[in-house]
Image (cartoon, rainbow, N blue to C red; front, side, top):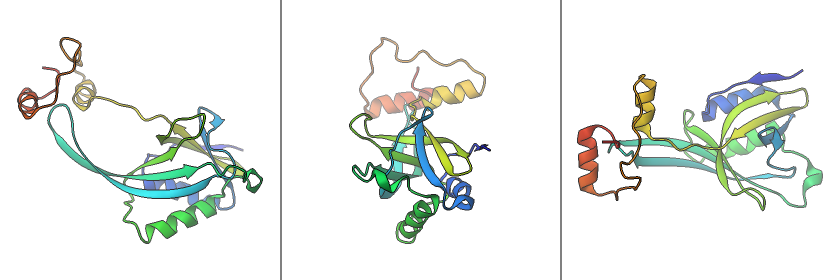
Length: 183
């Protein structure tokens, strides 16, 4: 029996979803195919602070948790990592690294076939013997346009001449006074 759980892409929500499934294989997949092969290792857990400014000149800051995975190579006979082993590794890290429960969660992975990318968790499928973590590619968007669309307004068409203006303090001031990057 398969139970599909859609979870917010937040660190603690992910951990809480895994917790009742100790002993099950933890399999990370992309578009229904296994992405991270058997024998993988958690090589690093990063508590990352992002400080950014969007194209409308608005500053923002947020936290992310990045779990870096490594293909163990010739260790396929070890099988997939179990949920309890993963949670144990994370727990040891969390005692020493200031990870935040509500931070965005990403899995970083790359190999000879896949470029290194920080994937987002899209959903989790709990099955009798395994937990499938479905990953998706991160996206890029324009926050002012996203906000306009969410408010039911039309989005702007992007840069006027098809070229991108260099970012300068003057451009940021002009964009901020207009309220968007689109002018």
